[in-house]
Amino acid sequence: MKRETNTIVLAIIACLLWSSAFAVIKVGLQYTQPLQFAGIRFTLSGLMLVPLAMRNKGYWNIIFKNLPFILLVSFLHVFGLYAFFYNGMSRVPGAIGAIIVGSGPLFIAFMSHFMMDNDKMGLKKALVMLLGFSGIVLVSLGKKATGSADFQLIGVLFLLVSNTLGGFANIVIAKSKGKVPALVLSSTTLVIGGIGLFVLSLPIEGLQTGPFPLEYWLSLSWLSMLSAVAISIWFSLLRRPGIKVSSLNMWKFLVPVSGVILSWIIISSEKPDVITLSGMLLTAVALVLISRVDRKRTKLVGKTKS
Image (cartoon, rainbow, N blue to C red; front, side, top):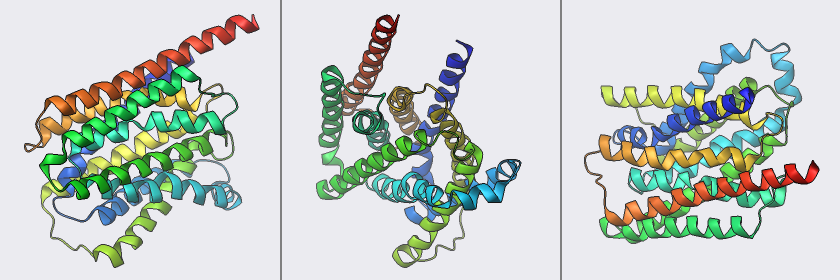
């Protein structure tokens, strides 16, 4: 019971940290380009964790022995995921970005059904997923009038690709229990993925040399810190015995709710509207319903075994 409570508390902390990223990213992107901003952010995040990761015995041996796995996670969870994420976020309001990315558990529940033996999806779960997707569509349509429809549609598609890559990453990490210590995995993948994003940004965006105002440095510092903490927590939780990928990710329903609220508070140009609130509600309800379906199924399995 203590372990379950600890898992819940850590999951909530990680999700609340992630929720703050949507509004803060919009602040930083006022002064620089998305890929380069992401590259610097994640490289710094990984470097923050290196001194802690190096406490693991045989640190360098672990890295070289598991380099293909580390490179795969670096691509899925950092380079590919955030290349699409930052380009998507630069095309849509922060509130919409929070809702779409917050629907990630829907993608993960779907992929876990086919890729995880202990995490199958029934009819109820599938129907709830459709409810969640309807929330995404509603939010996208509701905001079309605020800018170029094609421009924002591309942003939405980029964020959906980001969700898909994130789902694969969660499953790959969950299947690798005990392979690489969580801090070693998070620090190396953040550094490798961050450097990759920075290099990719140079021919696309050019080198951004500033000078940058205090707002930029504050947003970069906060984002680097939260990535180091939240990703390390999440990697460790994914690899705990008995943890289901889809069930753990249900806690991310907190991300769109708090992310939207923070966007409306911090970014003056973003205000609540009925359609966006409705889409947020549909997505949040879908995530909560999926969590309830999982709990009922776990109880039934337990009764059957007893």
